[in-house]
Length: 475
Ligand code: HEC
Ligand code: HEC
Ligand code: HEC
Ligand code: HEC
Ligand code: HEC
Image (tube, rainbow, N blue to C red; front, side):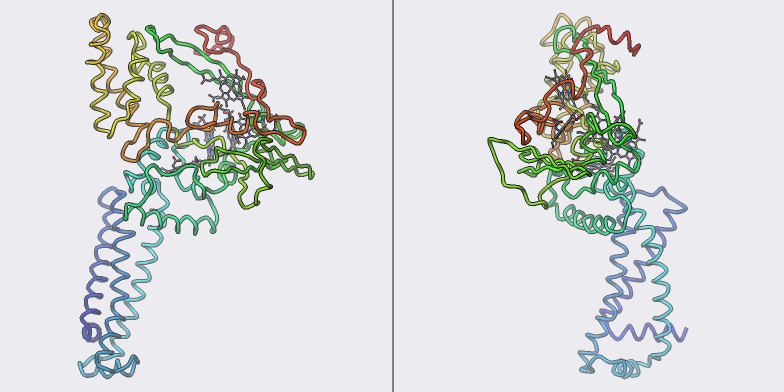
């Protein structure tokens, strides 16, 4: 008791120190309550994490810092100079037993150390969690989180791809995380978030924890089910045999689409823009010392600085392994194929596309706009309306859902903001054709392959009933 009284009186020499002590004490108490509550009483929630791992620890530390500052100021005011002897004199005047107060300070510091250990440990796990990365900054990460949640990688936490193992990336990520938190609080983050992500950890270190490109030898059959924008919404099939290939297989050299990421060689390129769309220089260096370079004869560039080169990795093609945003065509085709929208409604493919791709200003106005489908349909196709009224009305919720999960006006994420780099050139990205467009040539003048059959065999191209499907026995 005497010790505690000494401590309080000692702190009491300064109002600032007293306020600091009050802040710290209430911070610690609130923290203990929250941690206890999270463990035993209520479900953890992303915002509680922000309070218990960012705000309260900040308050506790602030309080702790205020104590010595307050005492130092007090001593200065007493013109005592900062020394323990001076502190002793000031304290003695107030009847403080410095030794006792010191013991209390030591004990409390030990308690604080334990508390910070626990907060630090839990805070670390919290900042690594999907809920923190994906849900706390709800508006900011809403697009990425939504797209992630429906992808094949939704069981993998954000940090497994974005940070990966190792101390270096850990430190980098916490620094950049702190910067991002500031940007969110100060409302200075970019909308949409810029892509490609320039400080992404080299994908091969991340993806190859689970995937090994040397194992992908052989082809991959893709069946695309699509609907035409005509009265019957005519269904067609495109069947591609993708030559995925691979490399480093014991008895085969790198070949096919995964040739670019073989362990036998490295492909590096130089792009003039941050989007990496304008590629003007490519180099392949092999383990055996051979080297090939492709350049654009119409736009010769001096050999680029190695620091500006990008080593081609998985993400140069698989830029959407988990943040999978569909195009309006893909989303509608899937909804019709799965029967969420009735493909028997005449003209529905065409009209739905029209309504979906209106640039709505907000998610709410999009939902309202799409709810107009029955009214628009009725006006345009009065004859079909009478026979299909119910299914047209049923098409509204799936349409709203398609829009909600691919377009995020609050973040300026529109259709095709985040296009996939796998495929042919579109107005949004030239994808594979950033390099495979005949522009870039090697020393002999030969262009990078443009041959359809080096990338895929086309087994059917927009056919209504391709025989290959019977042979594949798909359903
Ligand atoms: C399977 C690996 C993987 C997982 C898991 C993952 N991401 Fe990504 N993320 C990527 C790749 C790859 C990119 C695109 C990089 C590029 O285009 O340069 C990306 C891009 C982003 C971007 C930039 C905007 C964009 O869409 O290009 C944000 C923001 C982001 N991720 C947040 C998250 C959050 C939040 C989570 C967890 C909810 C998460 N990521 C989980 C691989 C992943
Ligand atoms: C922690 C393990 C893990 C990591 C890391 C990982 N993946 Fe995957 N990936 C999987 C699993 C498991 C599947 C199969 C999911 C399924 O079929 O349900 C998969 C599926 C895929 C597919 C096929 C997708 C499809 O639509 O069928 C691609 C492409 C892919 N991953 C690329 C990547 C890329 C690129 C990265 C690095 C950015 C990556 N993966 C990181 C485990 C992982
Ligand atoms: C040059 C572009 C390119 C690069 C680089 C690339 N891929 Fe692929 N990958 C493809 C294409 C194209 C397919 C065929 C699937 C498709 O068309 O959607 C594919 C298919 C796959 C599949 C699915 C295979 C299957 O049989 O289901 C996985 C998994 C995959 N890639 C992982 C990776 C990983 C991991 C890396 C990096 C080590 C990588 N890819 C590098 C273009 C690429
Ligand atoms: C950064 C430039 C670049 C991009 C992007 C790129 N490629 Fe390539 N690709 C090359 C170069 C260079 C070669 C080697 C020259 C050649 O074979 O004609 C090559 C070769 C190939 C080959 C032949 C490999 C073999 O068996 O010898 C295939 C198949 C291929 N690419 C498919 C793709 C596909 C599919 C995509 C998009 C998903 C793609 N590439 C994107 C640069 C690129
Ligand atoms: C550099 C590699 C490459 C070359 C060269 C190439 N393609 Fe493709 N093609 C792709 C990729 C990648 C896709 C997308 C596959 C997917 O959906 O995952 C694709 C998709 C397609 C599709 C389906 C498109 C759709 O969505 O309806 C058709 C049809 C097609 N290609 C025809 C051709 C023809 C014809 C040629 C030659 C004139 C050709 N391609 C040359 C890589 C290539």
